[in-house]
Length: 373
Image 1 (cartoon, rainbow, N blue to C red):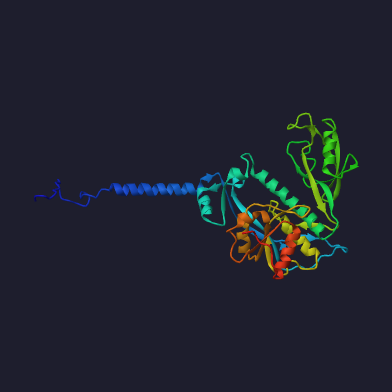
Image 2: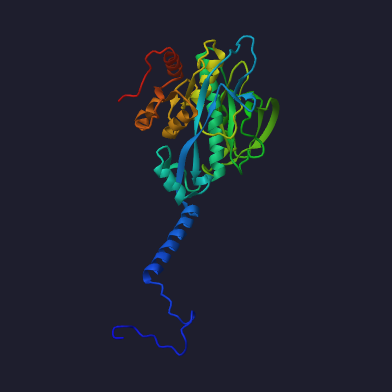
């Protein structure tokens, strides 16, 4: 028996009294590690982080339809007829997670960081700490509306159709004298009976009268003429100066009504393609010509194309939708380098005229501009 371990019992050895192997330290450590990983996974799935994810969004054909209506709808005019169009002139978009729009989790941030078509940026680079979801949506809606107005001016100027600028209420600040009286979108026709020709005229009149003066705004609100009374107050940001709490800007109109039916999209970057859609419909050349063209860029009333955000995501979204040609502001050439999907030709432009000429040259198989290498 020497060298053997002896178990002494007071009775017969049974299943209950037999020795059981003890759980080793290695097994306990493994269990703790697994539980820790599980806890971290749960946290990663729900714990918000101060970052914003930017990903490719849907594209919309500006010469196509949305819910059975043209995305860009031009009213009938005997003097300025519209022409049939074919193909695609798709505006591109991005989608965001995080920031004022909602929380971005650790898991989502890491997954986006690993995806070349997504971007993850610190929240403070895009939004002030005190900016709310409502603030962001209002600002994007205002920029979207401005892009449509600018597109009308640029396209009608290009096609040599007369353009008229209306003075328009672009925003009404809550808690100010104008709140509940004037509305964003009101076209100001008169002030105290005098015809309004520009926004400076209104600002000078309000600032030049004593605080507490009541002004009568004659506005066009959805086609109806309305008189609205607003009494000025002391500007908390500039004490001693009268104000009513509105933003004013130009709204451009032509001799025929032009409407945009796309909803739930914001920002200014569709301006170039809104302009191209109007040009395509008002000229007989069939600009898109059955081809699939996409792109992005802001537009100024004079036709200048400006910078946008999310160019890499928009390139990916355009190619995924089937685009062959992509027009973008020239200033983004450096940012787009290395991120152009296979099968997509990218053409940098600086004006609406550049964009039209590039499309025509590309359709004809001629040389088109490219980004400098």
